[in-house]
Length: 310
Image (spheres, rainbow, N blue to C red):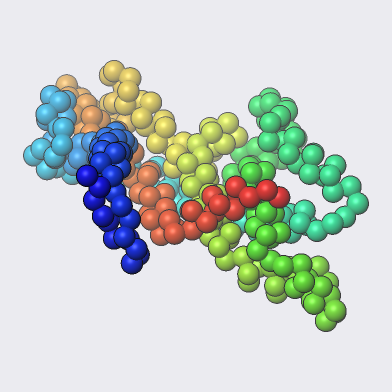
């Protein structure tokens, strides 16, 4: 027997098959949500649980014997704070430059000029092919950028995918008549870009800021390959070293040296190391999660922009 459902002032007849489908669909997505969220929840509760309970596998759904011993041990690691400041600097400065250069290049590609197809092909080609790690390393070294903070900002400065998304946004959202009117008033490309395009590109600027910001915050490989000075290392590279050392049996005393003067100290260090790895993950992901929460209203529009033909 059909059941009537009122939606937006209109009665929609809901059949038995519709109700079955909706129930199955709801159950399916609840299961998917649990599969996605449970590992994140497990990391969070394990980071504030007693190490012995974590080792015994007793932490499943709720924290057990609440403890901040892992966070205390991680925050006592001085290099962590230096790398945290480095990551903030690399992310903020690098993202600002990336967004500006991406929008400038996108505006150029949105205009008609001789050889535009060749330029588009050359840029798109880099999405699928590169010179490889060794040629890139030699190039960076010869340019004098090896072991400098600058390489953390310049490496991966522009994403071709983001460039194409920004170009499509400018072409589809900013009418060409506005450019013609600006030209009639005596504006050149620079004036039009800074006074018309940028003020009208708030949505795409927010989307690009999220994409570039998260990518730079999570970048550990650039620091691993191109930095030798440990005071320049980003947070992700340092955390990778910490997690790698904690995963090696017997090496945790090198991380918590202050607790490893004797056998009892070594045992205490191993206890701390068990929850410290969860604490490291939480510390490194909090800024990215906050950024996503603040910018989530722009995600759908950003995806729709990239789905348009341009």
